[in-house]
Image (cartoon, rainbow, N blue to C red):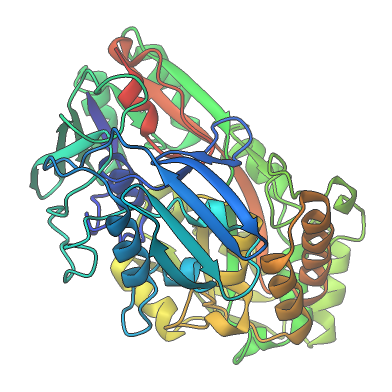
Length: 478
């Protein structure tokens, strides 16, 4: 199966995967104790056979006894213990370190069971344990971007060269029923026109999120035997302002930006209906989304008069302008969105200086705080607690992804409470308060929740994109 992607994976080491292609590729090669249910995104056992809370801060996990690493070694408790201890090492910079921060200790309980002792309550522990499990002797190995770490996923690496990652069905590893039928070639083609030509030449089986929405209808029409598969995504496209210095440290300016963007028109035109306007941070399909937040006084709905009023509080108008650096990725569609936003905001007195950057450079600039505004997407917003890493003052780079440098005691307290509270109803109430605080503070400017869309050929007709954009459905194709 040839899978067409817009960019190559930055790394095939799951401990350091940040970009979407790397995250999705490594999830085909590696597996966690739990995974997310495809229907409602709640955690279900994967490598784990059973999980029982012996008390609020003690979890015992029994492992499946029929799983081997790709190299043939059986999965045992020591592998789980070594992986979680390595990921939690404060001396390392693993991106999942925050996920295991609440684990005070972990120990083997025989060959096929582990016991986790929490240092504090952690509401999302089972979702956290989706992190890939490595062999005990490799769990703390130096970075291996070449993909040579032994894995437990349905695929293993066969070969990699610039622009192409070839995965073959793993003899061992975890598969729901049997090993995958097809090998998978993930081919990165940066130029959208080149991707379209390859698709129309019949050389592509699956093209997930590979084309601008307006190109989908004509491509589907000319794609012999192909069709469009779609599902509403659990994601968020948003603007992140740096709020600790520069013009956007002033809340009225951020509110003015949020009010000045006509999301509905952009969703209807740019996305051809393959997105819905975001009036909150959490996507509507997520259990924690609060429908009651849809109100006329939201700063996340287009209102030109209120936008002009907000800008006027800071003396900004067509004759007294404010200039902002605006970072976007090299993806052509994102660049077009960025330039359109610059055009739309200009009449309000806002000059966005669009800078189109390669992903690595973009992430470096964000990490260093060298920006005023950036267009980003959180591709997998499947757990509301993910907001902690992006909005809590304890996760300002390099400790996390709070790139806007948000420091707000009330927001911190709510995010900490959501991290430690059990019970869906109680947690939903907390995240509703997070959303309301975000409407006051405007630490982000939500824009859209985009559909997951894939053009699929005849051999891959049964492929359905998942809400989080992952490609695990490839393993089920026959």
